[in-house]
Length: 304
Image (cartoon, rainbow, N blue to C red; front, side, top):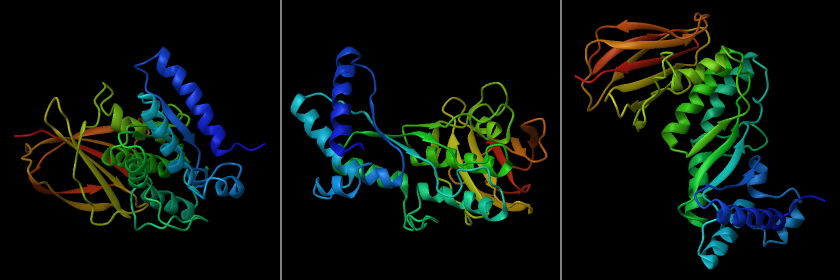
């Protein structure tokens, strides 16, 4: 017997009510919905949806939880929790077509102009869309993605996708995200995470305050930037998605005066020992940088 709208709601409220009583400071997530279809439907299908006036599942769920919480004067849901596995690339395939799709498909997380290249065949812009759903149906709820994976984590192509997704998650300001399961120690996927969370091997992390960054051609190079609250340095993460071509990029900084030297951290197919580092001179508010093919580059720019 397939799970229905009502069963998911009833089970959630039963357990969340008890958790809130016993652990009042705990943050409760739900309903942990698994994919695009199940954001809008239950496993019981069209008949179950019709029984609920053809309302989409997640908006319906948020409305019912909000109504319950308002009546009981207690919040049982802190974080709208979903999973996302991109169609067509959550696999180990790295032929040319799949590799190119894997890197394009990260746009499904944010771009209203990107048509998902699967049987979905429509724009998803997942994070802004879910924030809109939250705002309409239970304002104040956070957004989390408790499972995600872009596939091919043991390859450089998969590593680039991971780095791109991490940059998007930070820029789009989701509350939490959990990779499923964990990339093998020392693998390209592992080092993509390390570029954000421990790039110098001593615990240094990508900045904690996202700042605006724009690439003129996202299919070639994507970029993410953040400020470090402790040091005031600017972190600039650049991902060259071209498998065989260098990228010569012109970097223009606004409202930030860098020192003339910076530290560069890089992971690419020529980094068998892990993340390489080097000092770079000639830094100014406008400068050029060459990115190797299929590479993740982090510049740490100190303020003047």
